[in-house]
Length: 210
Picture: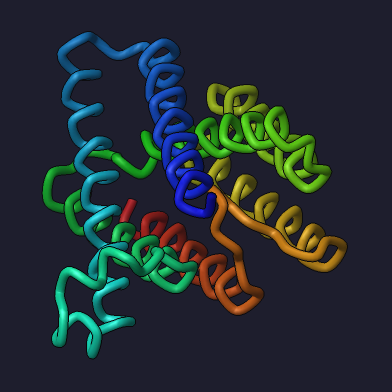
């Protein structure tokens, strides 16, 4: 039963990301060649994100991995591995962006927000979970802010508004609900604050380099 639930959760994440990619492709005004290149970069990000998660999983269960490498397959990818994958992927993304001068971060934001919205929608339809409804409304607001404001605000201003809105909304849910999650992974208060600080530094760094 637990394995079936895990498989369904992974399938939901996959479907949600695909939905985000399709919406991005549909609403992207770039040429077909440019969109193809952008999608390749975004797909590369998600593939490496999964790799980072598995690296985190191995490091967290290193003794078991050394004794029996195949046994690591039975261990679930927990929130700590998810956190490590987020930070590792963003650092790699910033390095590639600086090297290739392709704004992958700006491509990922609408995809991830849309994917998170779709994930919570599916969870709510399946389980009728109140907390999924709260997350659904929250990510719906962030998606609306992005698509409504992307032509009206500068990129960095929009990112800053989204980041601050994410922090306020996530903290509100954290202190008013038993848990807060994204794509089924629980978010701890230290991670929420560290991620906000980390992304704030990233935005300031990008602004200083302009």
